[in-house]
Image 1 (spheres, rainbow, N blue to C red):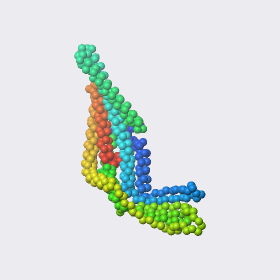
Image 2: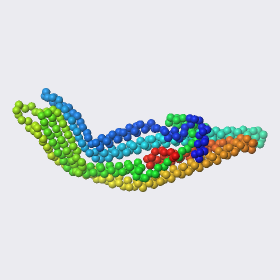
Image 3: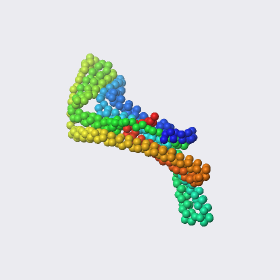
Image 4: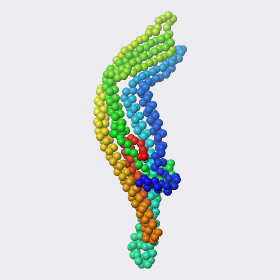
Length: 414
């Protein structure tokens, strides 16, 4: 079938819109999707680094003291926010791939619809001409009294119906042309189809399954942090009061999780105004404070129960999803294979219709066939080409459905 159609391409204008061009289509939404991926990546890297800081400056307005400047550095493990950021990044990457894939599918479908509309418009025009010739012949016979008035009226109604169908086909063609033009392409549709690769994809490799795994990890991280929140929060803080600068250290832990740490430096040290020779308490010494805080909030227990229930539900959804995805992938692959078989049969039908048209034209040259028989054969060939284009469209849709499930890109089979 592909050899037959490739020969037909040689007869088309040089600027014909082909499926190969459609595969190179870039959706206008790609840039925004790429920016979302980069933003999510930056967010995840910042959380994994765990560092944050601040700069400050101050001065006591009621005295003539100097300005003091400070810097604060804090380290904190990301916790469930890191898992959420990883899930957001995975979602952004999936969306980017989906935008790229759906854009190409849109362009391929535009080619298929244009091809189908062109073929059906050509068929409608041929049938309209055949109906006109039939009506002219019947009216000629009616003038001789060889045809009844009812037969003449039937022919007129048939011609009107065919003309309406031709106008409808022309309108559909204009719509298909506008769709192709909106995508930045032009020309007639190249009468050619491609074969696409269906990658072998396990359910665990699909975007849906990966997201469900991350959803479970997020639920587990949130439940773990809620459980830690029930333990006392223990803090150890130290301060060194120097002549030129003040240094503060902090370490906070709760439950069995990783502690957070902070470092604060302020210079110069704001010393109290005392008479000369008066010792300043704590100057040049480290002072440490150990504290523990227990939150008495009954709602925290309710929050923990809710998060544990969500963790259980996420595990159940993940377990059920694997079987569902396996079934959906199998069904989508079967649909794609059936669509490919239908596409091959439509190609064989077109070859048969082409041979019939060539035979009718040969017989007409020898006077064995009428012009109406030639028009009928030409219309049948155009309709067969329209059915091939429709089968091509159905094949694209079936392949696209499988690729959406698998999270794979369009790839032409060599």
